[in-house]
Image (cartoon, rainbow, N blue to C red):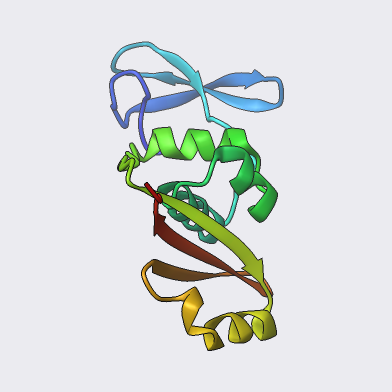
Length: 137
């Protein structure tokens, strides 16, 4: 702990224990506070992947199914990092989860990669292939 959460002063003293957590009193403003407990920490790798997938157009629940991280956590990260998804109604993402041999077969067929943007990202031992296609009018 570095400073008082009320006034940011670094002058504080111990002031008892509440629910097995040390309580402090700020000498500058008289504010009582305890050290905030840390929740379950999720590896930054999953945070980055979740935000990438969100930007690719996947829903929160799709991201939950793919990464195994709660959709509520993903929503909180999007809010925390102020991520804005660009909306373009002419394109829509489609994705597939493939293993290495399936990915090689997919790229061997040139029809699969012409006329659309393709992005491949690693998901553990599999790969997620995201493809953008223009809506047919």
